[in-house]
Amino acid sequence: MPTANAPWWTRAVVYQVYPRSFMDSDGDGIGDLGGVLRRLDHLADLGVDVLWLSPVYPSPQADNGYDISDYQDVDPLFGSLETLDELIDQLHRRGMKLLMDLVVNHTSDQHPWFMESRSGPDSPKRDWYWWRGPREGFAAGDPGAEPTNWHSFFSGSVWNLDEPSGEYYLHLFDRRQPDLNWENPEVREAIYEMMRWWLDRGVDGFRMDVINMISKDVDPDGSLHDGPPLPGGPYGDGSASYLCGPRIHEFLQELHREVFAGREGSFLTVGEMPGVTVEEARLFTDPARAEVDMVFQFEHVDLDHGPSKWDPRPLRLLDLKASFGRWQAALADAGWNSLYWDNHDQPRAVSRFGDDSPECRRDSATCLATLLHLHRGTPYVYQGEELGMANHPFAGIGDFRDIESINHYAEARAAGMPADALLAALRRMSRDNARTPVQWDASPSAGFTTGTPWLPVNPDHDEWNAAAQRKDPRSVLAHYRRLIALRHEDPAVALGDFTMLLPAHEEVYAFTRSLDGTTLLVVCNLSRNPQPLAELVPDAVSAELVLGNLDVADPAVLAPWEARVVRP
Image (cartoon, rainbow, N blue to C red):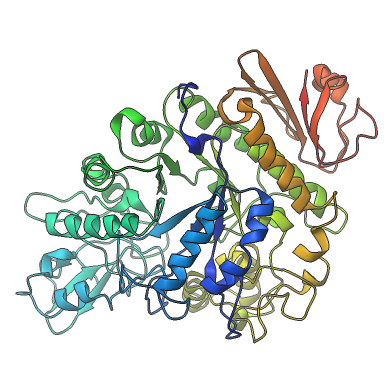
């Protein structure tokens, strides 16, 4: 991307709020928009530019709001449209923007569109969703009668039988999240109209949930294709038929043209795209193609997966370097990437990729943050990440609320897997690790609520909380402030060239960022072992220290989990 007149979001930092776990203002144990308003000064003090708000629309909450029943209102659980209007106003007063979560691959099965579609085969909205009869030679409801063999992201088949009509509807996720049929132009126009309504209300853009799944590979006769069999069960991998499908670029270009073209304002569009390749991402985010501003991809957070996410293995730093380096190189002259460790779907980074032991937690949290924020791309901070929040020590399956975790546990137990092993995997990889309440202070409910929190507060909140860190210059919070300020202040952080150093070193991650004759050298020790910096990167030893996460005891040695940003 050219450095002259680069878009504002190249130097911005996005903060994700998962509202039900951020701050509760009414004592019902569930976070809400009133709670977000109460904590805006925390975000302003941190220095972030954009607040990404996970869904607050009306929803039966089968998937914590990612099953939307009304795109143009706010669920009373979270507040009202008037409260959201106030949030937009207060953000703008502080110089921040609001990014709404847009979930348009699917709706709730309680959305009026789907309820009308489900009323019968002759419904005018029947073709707004993916309805298909049973497989040829099978009766509806027979084992194997589903139109394809695809496995759902949330276990079982992607097809759910509607007994009155004898037809199945498609749901890539939960059965209560039927997929919209983007092949139907009426569906697309209804979505664009809704998006324009939100922009008129003052919203500054959209994070588009699984947006690369909206185009399905469908034959002219309407049939979909089986995927290759998955090991150990009756299902297949259908991803080739719905990841970056044949019309995806056409749909996104049309969306941009119909919603944003000719509109005044500084907007941001982020495409969450599981399975996207760097080559595809370059196309999606090339400004000349007018599709999305940046992708939100998953390659690096899949590196520690075994046969599935529930069989994790330790992250190899060489794999991380190869992945990050490939994305930095591929998008160097066109396109843009999102940078993140944590979000509402991932375990806590300090527990997953760092070291959450008492002696290393602070240092590893700040080391990981430094590594990420000094790359080229737009960094994302997930709520609590700036405090070094860690995974929760869940006692049993009854402590979990996440539908993916609960479904996996039930399915695996039915297959004979031992409960202890399953719980160990859930403690490491469940999405609920990201969804425990934000730890504001050391009070019994961590300052999150005056009631009973919907998900247990992490018992370590008495030590790890915002109040304890706010005035501590060595805290994780203080380090995040300095990192965000550096991106705002030094153009090389936002737009500089990237060069990987020590690509074969298994414990030190080092690289340079260079722009207009200015170079920043970044060295990070992702281990408990001291590293001979004078041997590895001699230029770093006597260079000017721009930012570090530790007091430098010996310039020639990189201490465990130490990160330095220097100017050679």
